[in-house]
Image (cartoon, rainbow, N blue to C red; front, side, top):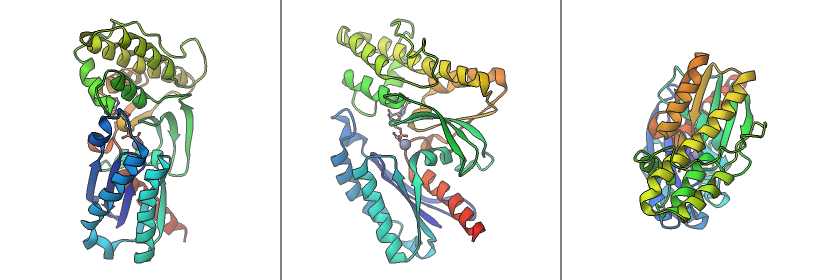
Length: 314
Ligand code: KG4
Ligand code: ZN
């Protein structure tokens, strides 16, 4: 078995994955959303202190598996350095005391592996849209070692723009689920925000301009207008991704497309992507909802493949 640890942002999570069956044997996650909510975003120092409390509590529940562990997997980047360190220190301590290796996992690649948990029929190659709080990327994922970023954001990310819009409206953190809910009662055409980078040909994303346009709208609106603003914002934020993907697909038509990351839970985004893929006859792959946001299962699932590949070489 492999014990995996995730602490790159505001979720303290530990999982145990069986190497042979790739099944998740144990998983626990303690989220800090409530604690960060009143600040409208994650406060790194507070997050690190909460990890220092939560991770040992979860680990205590895993003691009975210690004798069966073959490796410790841990997210090492990208993420908040002070929170990553909490997971890394725990991994080091376990590795030394149990005399087993550490497998370092890139958090973004971990999100791609969330697609395979309890869905062993899904596999590479995949064109992946990664939409999280820190990143908006399109990745050509061909294998464990062949993942190439073909598009990324120049400033804010998709999920982050939802967080910032929610903060402007005083709706707490994380903003994604609240804005999505609010948008359901709004008119998507009431605020004609401009689609980012529409006159520029480059294959990239940008959310800072849209965020500022929404800020101006919020400042001159009543609370009763918030649902319309949220709906119009969600439409344009998504349309931006659709337009850039359409452009990318002209030279790279999709066959197997996936959406991963916390914001892949967004139903409007999912439905728009489904429509976009139809003319190509491409398949859409999604992780189980519980594995979309940060979790240690995806870290463990990737670690099993790394562990297997090194075993085959030696
Ligand atoms: O992948 P994740 O859990 O953490 C990072 O690696 O950043 O993603 C969290 C992000 C937050 O910005 C959150 O607001 C966003 O995902 N998110 C959503 C939705 N659910 C979560 N954004 C839009 N719509 C949602 N339903
Ligand atoms: Zn993440």
